[in-house]
Amino acid sequence: MTIIKKIGFISFVFMLIYACNSDDAVTQQPKFQQRLIEDSLMKANQFLLERDSELIRSYIVRHQWDMQVSEDGLWYDIYNKTNGTKINNGNIVRYNYTIELLDGTLCYSSEKDGVAQVKIGASGKESGLEKGLLMMRTGEKARFILPPHLAFGLIGDMKKIPARSALVYDIEIIEIVDF
Image (cartoon, rainbow, N blue to C red; front, top):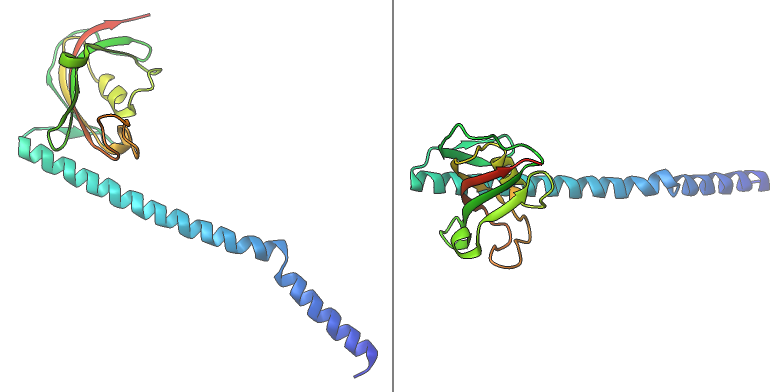
């Protein structure tokens, strides 16, 4: 093999090695791994949502409640309707409440902790609670069941509500303050 052929062959091998180690090849593997991780997380989340939904349905059947479910998974029943003022974003709402776990454990109540007050849309409260309150009017009573993703999520409230807990709210609207 002549020297020119040897240099050409070595150059060709180096180009192949360089091409295999180029940024495109290096970034393909992490993108593939990231996609696998995302797919795994999506499947796990889907499994948890289905499991939560089964637990909530079973709870509703045991209590013989007639509840509806929203697109995002909030279960609700306004069992005492009125013609009172409708709640809107920006309203400050005062309400009596109980919060229980699906096993019946009472976590919080207005009887023990006092009447609750929240500004709709700026409260930092559970998103499921605000969605439920927006369905109500002054004087109404309702039950809401918030799956974990609409309640305190993965960590709970670090006090009385454990991680990944579905919550059962019983609410009575006392007053709406419009600012």
